[in-house]
Image (tube, rainbow, N blue to C red; front, side, top):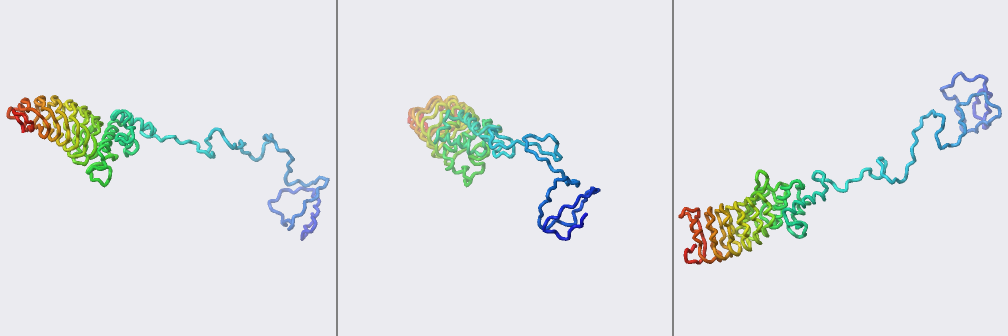
Length: 384
């Protein structure tokens, strides 16, 4: 083998003659002399074949094929993939998708799976059994304000399956709006208002709201809202509080309008106190249906007309109607009030005489009647 030249020549060194003997083993070391500083053109191919083995087989020329090759490759190939599509008519579950794979629900669910609109419809069904059909949908009414509150603003977010709770919250929020609750002296929605209990329109059950009392079964049984600057009318819906036993709105001065005839539906009502207000109109004849009444106190209003038949009120102990504009004669049926202890009729426009049946109730005749006042101008007997 010729000795390597000490320096590279400007012209490429001719290829040495091949040795007749192949090397016994390939070397793991690089050659001692690196290549020339500048690249030299490759050797000129000779027509004669070389006896030296090539370092690696030359790949045969080939044309690209659309299908896989028949001969196996030494390097494993990855499975072919389909070319990506620019658009898709159907969304995919691929995480590479630009669009989210799960579309959001059109409405969040509440009340064990109800949509907000289904909840509202369910609440309206209950309210329509309390107020006149559709009245809660009439804008600028107290019923509308109460329904809007219970649907959208009530922090308790009650559900349609809570019928008693929905009914009582609707009625008492209606009382609040109908009597200008924001102007009350105590327990308004405003946190600055004094209140020793839970406030009106709060998240608490109505049984914890001020001036209310409930039974063990959470039925509202008493409304004691006297002397609290209530102004407005008594909603007829109060009569839907089926277990109500006491309604006391004394001394509010500006509770006006008529006494709702629906009060006759309150089968357990034992005390009706509406003194010192601005009530007008006649006493409802339906009072005769409140057979559990013990007290009827309606003094200092502007009530007119005659005293209706109250003969069914066999448990009535106090009948106070003085200082109104009542007229006509004192009905003899008052003599059937066998439990009456006090009857106050003065300060009205009655005519005639006091019926003997009423006088017979006086305790000096063995009856319960302790006090009887009137200013009728009859001759015998004249009661003062």
